[in-house]
Length: 253
Image 1: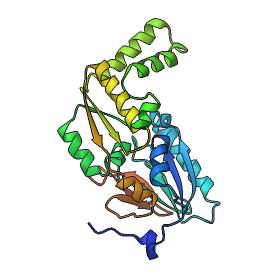
Image 2: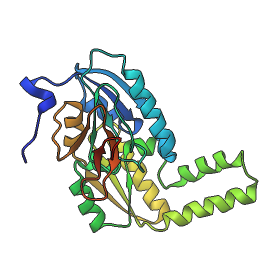
Image 3: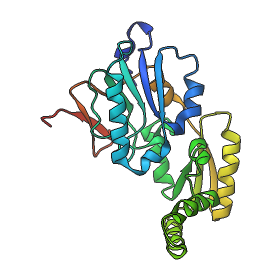
Image 4: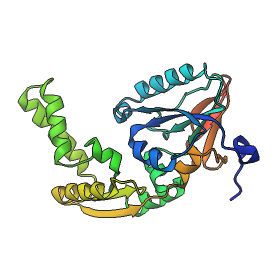
């Protein structure tokens, strides 16, 4: 596949600011090591995914704040479409680059094609990664206890148990814990945690080796149009209901 490297002409990585979900914090530290062209990195909490409108507002505010920088050529987003939480983002001064991904699992697997193939082969899989594990945001006993604690301050005990049972019923659609890692230092304890969750849930467990190429190329400015969407000032990012996942639009459509 031919890769366009227009932002990286002359062999130089473009100077960028990076806006990233904290699920990738250790992976970015690993694959962006010595990346002197990354002038600024901002990580945002994983909980923003729970409210796509809030995620969009937070990222758009960050884009506006980066307008004052004269030392960057682009802003890179370590996100996917994320429940359309990144849809309608629009750069004001610097071009914006995002992987063609529904969510972070595409980035862990290295391509939207590999993600689609795995989902087809295992539609009942639930994906675990080191970052999601750290936040106890995956099915398992720690997630139940974290939810119980959060709900206890808002609801009485009977309602709390009802809501927890509703959450368990949603998990019943799955029967396999699929653990993905990109070789970070916490990969092994992350695998052990995912396996414990699978055992507790009476699920199957599988471990897949991730592919860092999509994340690494995002960080190092190797942006081709097949794997990345580039949004220029005056354009906005919108959902595309096909295999491309996203496209750009202008105010006129």
